[in-house]
Image (cartoon, rainbow, N blue to C red; front, top):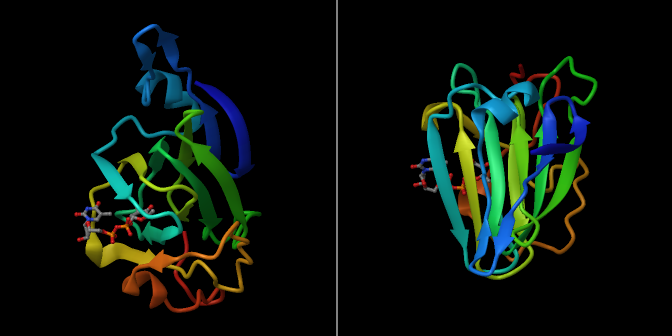
Length: 182
Ligand SMILES: Cc1cn([C@H]2C[C@H](O)[C@@H](COP(=O)(O)OP(=O)(O)O[C@H]3O[C@H](C)C(=O)[C@H](O)[C@H]3O)O2)c(=O)[nH]c1=O
């Protein structure tokens, strides 16, 4: 598990090392000890599997408020996605900045999303599957979202989304002066 990039504080892209042989491949997706030095909590509470059959599906951008704020370990295990992380931590140099990542199941990588960052992705192929571990339990009451096209963030998506949930279309504009941050 080798660190490839850290474009925002604590937002880290890690290379995974699939072991290939005549039968196929074996890839370790999570290792507490190997990730300990990369800001990942010792305990991950949930594993989520997100399946999106249609290319152009956009999910996010979501985050949970404290005390349910979570670290996410994201891996694309099927297809390809354009993954985006937005830093909503007031006081960090990256406040309201975002980082984008091309995640592809053919080149396994692990994206570490720290608490205080919104996360979302756009599928760039059909039959996308994203597996992610989270360090806090799902808490709908503390979940918040920002719009994928909020002008404050200036996110450039490679293609326009073809499918977005009603909930994700209904997120209000992020108010950098007022919205609660970390
Ligand atoms: C996140 C979550 C959702 N759910 C239920 C709630 C809904 O009935 C259904 C779909 O949830 P949602 O529409 O929030 O799914 P996504 O839009 O893919 O949400 C995810 O989108 C972006 C990419 C993220 O990073 C978040 O982890 C996550 O919020 O699963 C649960 O039961 N447990 C959970 O942990």
